[in-house]
Length: 204
Image (tube, rainbow, N blue to C red; front, top):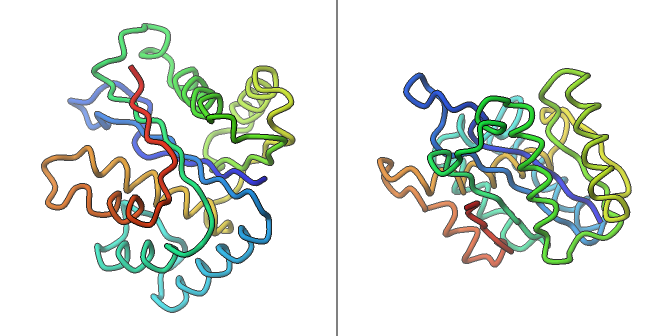
């Protein structure tokens, strides 16, 4: 089992100064490594076809690129589970005042809220953050999730096609909460219609 994790939005709470009002962390789950390889190859081929450089990123993509991306992957075998954090509902000072704690907590909550899917999973997380942060997150997740996770690694999204898929998925879900945008749920609906959304959990 292979699990790819990425987020959309940021862990900050200064919304009036540019922080996102919503934070989404999503995981793309492959039960079979062969399915993961086929999907990775398709992402790579599509990036060349569409002349996207250096990577697919939801927030930097034109609508037509988003449409083509999700349409091209609808027949591949993977499941997306996500956790949506509407920041106005978070009152814990420990989460509001410490961005690392916020990120660690909600990644763990996502992995923990897996409906029994995770079993000896190899987890890859988008490799943002400094070395100390990565080490602390690895130790934190291993301690709390134990046998459900076989390994945790960080990946450079520019070199990992499946982390790019996780970014696009998280971005599509986050966009659906932006009611000011036309067709805000357009790409979430594409994923839902393709049967890719295993769960979209709003944290309360």
